[in-house]
Amino acid sequence: MSAVQFEVPAIVPPDPQAGVADLLVERVKSTPSLALFAVPDGEGWRDITAAEFERDVIALAKGFAAAGIEPGDKVGFIARTTYEWSLVDFALFYAGAVMVPIYETSSPAQVSWILSDSGAIAVVAESADHAARIAEIRSEVPLVREVWTMASGDLDTLRGKGAEVGDEEIARRRQLAVGSDIATLIYTSGSTGRPKGCVLTHSNFVELSRNSAKALKEVLDAPGGASTLLFITTAHVFARFISILNIHAGVKTGHQPDTKHLLPALGSFKPTYLLAVPRVFEKVYNSAEQKAEAGGKGKIFRAAAATAVQHSQLLEDGKKIPFGMKIKFALFDKLVYSKLRTAMGGRVTYAVSGSAPLGPRLGHFFHSLGVTILEGYGLTETTAPATVNLATKSKIGTVGPALPGVGVRLAEDGEVEVRGINVFKEYWQNPEATAATFDGDWFKTGDIGSFDDEGFLTITGRKKEIIVTAGGKNVAPAALEDPIRGNPVVGQVVVVGDQKPFIAALITLDSEMLPTWLGNNGLPADMSLADAANNASVRAEVQRAIDIANKNVSRAESIRKFTILDTEWTEDSGHLTPKLSIKRNVILDDFAGHIDEIYNVGVNTTNVALGG
Image (cartoon, rainbow, N blue to C red; front, side, top):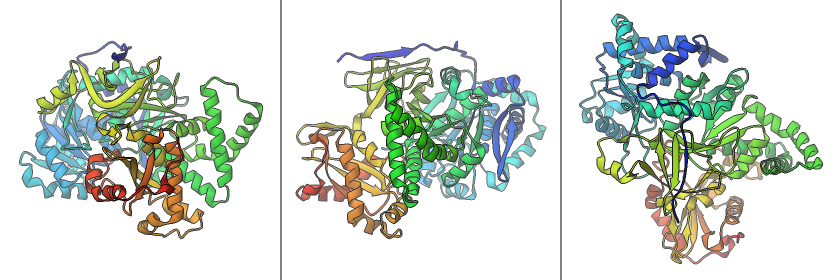
């Protein structure tokens, strides 16, 4: 197969002198009184204008300067997703420093590695707990001179210290960096091995923001003003890029770090677009279904969901909606869809989804609700998005075409490679890893994909995760795992079978959704995970999810057996990354005994797939 390639020219002329700070300077000059942020205030929200935000940024930047932070210095930052995240981010840009974000769930050992490898000389921590984790490893990071804790009022202390620093000093510092200079050092969450530091430049953020704002104009320019409520971690490049893009595009940003309070926050903030990972959309759907079930309306909900999917598929195919379906759709809109729209705040018309495949069912379901989910694709190394579906043209099940200024091609073996304005400079102090991941100026992503004739990309799996069965069949686990994970009782799933006679799966249950499902099915809602794992009804429900997934693959690729574990995989257990991706190698090692048991016993015919 010859390489297939699609390249979209940039639509904004490059500006090699521009730094990220310039995006805020331009925004304030253009619309000083526009609300750029909103922060919780009692039951509602208080707006912060562009000019107010910049004043706060400059005051804190002066504090960093007064505390001895010099241009080019690395400063660690560990915090949840709040207004202060963007404040500290831009204060460091204005002070000429380089932020090194740390996931707030990181272990002391991970914190130690990131701080020592990056050469950070100071750290900003949000809470006493975060500060305690840093204190635990302080002797391992002798370069760290200062640890400021936001919960202790240290940002105010810094602002006070900076009162003596002149405006001209901050103006000088924020203009030092040019496009090719390092803007931030983000460590990959690393599903294998030690995290590597990705050097992302000012141009990566500036050029990608300016071009994405044009490509996603409809999303970022909603009637009455665009807004979004961020709840995925800003330490991850996906939310970090969006928060910077919003400043450039003049989109109001709110934050809700605790997803348990997400629905009330959506109701009061009323965003026009959302940024989420597929697990969030699965939870919204499953919660609605189980709530309907508990109220005796499960049958209505499922009929509404099936109609929604059919309706969206017909629209996408350009086919006429039959009169009967129009009537049914209008009825379900009143009974079901409108309630879900209201639960999301009533104004959401777009959602940008990334980090894992969404699946056509959910894409079509939300589309019929009036929410177009624009799936995109990217990595830390591509400053987040390389491809994204557009408001003007999207194809459910794909991750869209390349963004302006980005090229995407497929290597001989189907590996996706990317080059352009968004591709990182190098791995920090790791020339071997950098050399291994580039083919000329093309970054090798490690993902396998395919294009349609219009350049819309579909990701089919990870190159390193392809399973080869004893019979020589190549199986991409994601094609099976993603639909199974959509079932309300399933927490996570890992497909196994490398060099084995058949494909099998390890399943964990979703402890949040399980009690509701059990109650709806006449079972004790307080059943333990261990008891649920062996319960016949629960096992039948998991089998049902597997049967649905098996219909999409050949018999040789289908799951023939499964084991339900009596534990969960979480970030804390070390089995999920901060963006909730599975750490496959860790799971395969930690649960090797369970996998051996699957293959040491003959195939249980009750678990043979119904799919072909």
